Image 1 (tube, protein in one colour):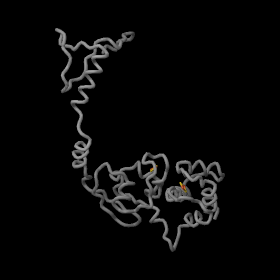
Image 2 (image 1 turned 90 degrees about the vertical axis):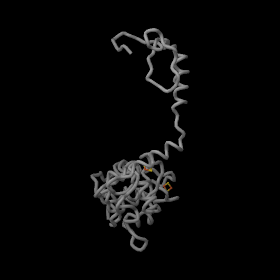
Image 3 (image 1 turned 30 degrees about the horizontal axis):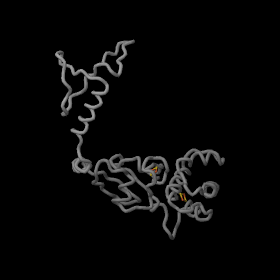
Image 4 (image 1 turned 60 degrees about the vertical axis):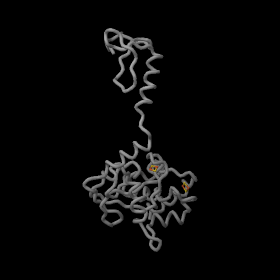
Length: 220
Ligand code: FES
Ligand code: FES
C-alpha cells in the first residue's frame, strides 16, 4: 500500500494479499490480483477455512514441545522443589496442580481479583500472572506456609477475631496481601490501607472487617 501523505486507498481499491493455500482470485496481466472489497472478504474467508487446524490437534502438538529445560529450582514454604513443567505453566497452576497447595485460589486467572496472591521473596505477587520459569532460586510462601491450625499467623488470628471473611474464597489472598503490606511503605489512615489492599476483591463485601483485622495487626 502506498503510504504517501494524502494517498487514500478506498475499500474498492486494488489489494495485494499475502500468499495462501486457498485458490486466489484471477490475476490481471500485471500479476497482481484484482479485488473488490466483497471478493477480497470471500477470498480471505475461504483461505482461513482451508488453513484451519482442528483445536484438539493444535493443542496436542504444542503441549508436547514446551517442557522447562533445565528444571526450575525453587523453595516453597521452606521445601526445595525442582519444577519440570510446561514452560507456559503459571506459578498458580504449579502450586495448585503440582504441589497440591490449594489454599491459593484461582479467581479470575487474569490479575484482577488477588485471590491468587502469594509471596515471592517476601513480596506479594499475583501468581496467576507469573510463570514458574521466572522463579529459579526464588522463595515462595503460600497461605499454607504462613501459619498452622495450632499456631496461626497474627494476621490469620486477626481475620478470625474480626470476622474478616464470609465464604472465604478471597481470604488466603487477602491475608497474604495484608502480611506483605506490613513491610511496605503505607500511610496509617484507612484510605491508604484501602488503597494498598485494592488489588484484592471480596465478592462477599467483608471489606470493613478485613480492614479492622489489618489495623489491629499494624498497631499491635
Ligand atoms: Fe490471580 Fe485473580 S486469580 S488475580
Ligand atoms: Fe467471600 Fe471474600 S469472603 S469473596
